[in-house]
Length: 465
Image 1: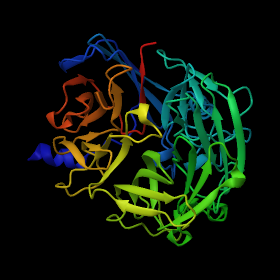
Image 2 (image 1 turned 135 degrees about the vertical axis):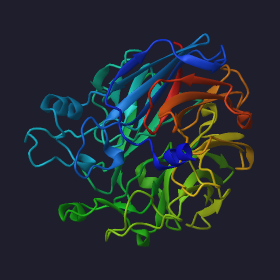
Image 3 (image 1 turned 180 degrees about the vertical axis):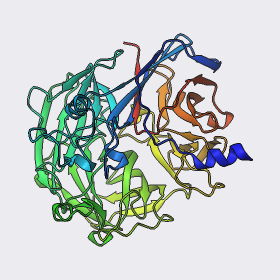
């Protein structure tokens, strides 16, 4: 009983204060021999405590699990952003929440970037991403920081942590919010071709300033969700939350043809909600279908007057958005596909922007009183119907599940899920490897770390090059 109570009280948010290399990790079970490459994971790990800092703005730390012919090793490194380097030299925090400088910070220090949200591989470059700044290039293997990557000066300003790679063309499609400066309603949009050259970059105005964490890309369209976690410079100047939940603003989604321009955007309206993450989207004749993890009310952010949002409504569920492109209506439909609390949806990325038959996401245990902790993984079909469901022991938590195909020509869904699991009783982490189409059987292998990997955000698998 005492151990259970400890597990329920603890969480895995606090940073770890060290960088480490573990060349030979213990493996329970057997690692599939086809898994040859590296799972890169990113997340907030503040170097120093900072007054008023939000979890979202901790310094980025990369965690790399390298798998090779049944063996496993691990390395972690902070991303050495200009902010991290300045604070490291000063021996203390110089920034508070959302890029706000502390009063005693040097006047010439302006870059509060943390590169803490995602890490992707495109056109031969490994890039750490965070939505308020340009990508930071990382050296594969060593995890050394190479600095900002601006695509030969063709891209400027904010750059989403959730770009989409078109599986057919190899093109990387991206956007940025706050494109005209902090807390502004301007968005940027652009694309990088398969060779790594910026092929387009433009800006446009959204209906209001919003935190736009993710967006939607199909074969022929791009959709921009403007949802009411609003940004306000007036609030920030008054010392109030720069981002807050304002449901009266309503939900807008802008639909644009990939071959068109921002002038052609058609704005659809919907019920107020918030979405951090998109599972996938595709075209169905004159409709666009998008599967998302939708909150009725925003979590982690208050109302504009400081009141907290309703915790019962501040949980995400698998939801389907439908857009009718025939011009009959400017409303989009929102239909929940399940009542299970979940987040961090993933697919077989070879189906990105195309109709998928498999999806996965991290879920909460409905039998436990706390909805916040994600403690299982769900496998669903292309219509959200559960195909498999696995729950961890009480108190343990799980990260985003990343799909890895068995081979380049394997059928959709044939492969594994990789997820980092925190073991609450031992206060350390495992890398869990699941058969992607049989998650209920539990992990086929566990790679055991001697320390914990704090709860983080996103990662991706990069096969051996």
